[in-house]
Amino acid sequence: MVVKKRERILIFFAILAVALCAFGRFYYTPHMKKITTLKEEAKAADLKLKESVLFTREVETVEAEVVRLEKELQSLSDKMFRGEEFGAFLKHLRGESDRLQIKMISMTTQEEKPTLPAGKKPRSAFQYRRVAIQTVLRSRLNPLETYLKGIAELPFLVAVDHLQVERIGDGTSFLKVTIGLSVFVVL
Image (cartoon, rainbow, N blue to C red; front, top):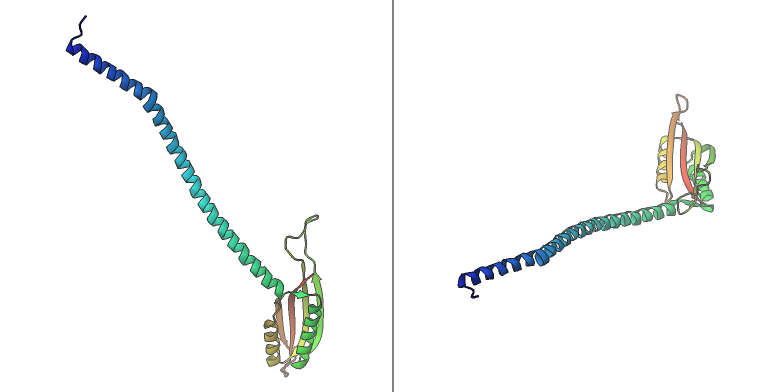
């Protein structure tokens, strides 16, 4: 049996079609699926990378804030009194009032204890207590101004909680001054 030229061409194209179908089915399609899954994995990895970059930036921001707060805490702790310094501060207030000819009528101190839930430890790196100082003075206006500026310029953390000024009598220039101060003492 002799195969004609037409039949050879037809067989050639049939074999070529079967080969192309087999190539597409067994090689090209699985590889396209792999390429598609790899593209999806690359997108997911790229998204994770972007998230990690954002997370890294946030971590750096938080670390910078922690460093800033630690420096602020250190500067505040340097401004807090330590044991004997508190007594020296009270003597300084007394001596300053004598120097400016301000009569100190009374001075009371009251320690405020921090309220913590039962069984909880304080979070701060150092222990401190707040001490309220209530002072009643008799003074003229100019020495009082100097006295208050002196308190504000102290290198310690001293807060004026309240200040009440009353005139004593009608014809005098003396004032009755009630000052509430708060200081922090490191334990």
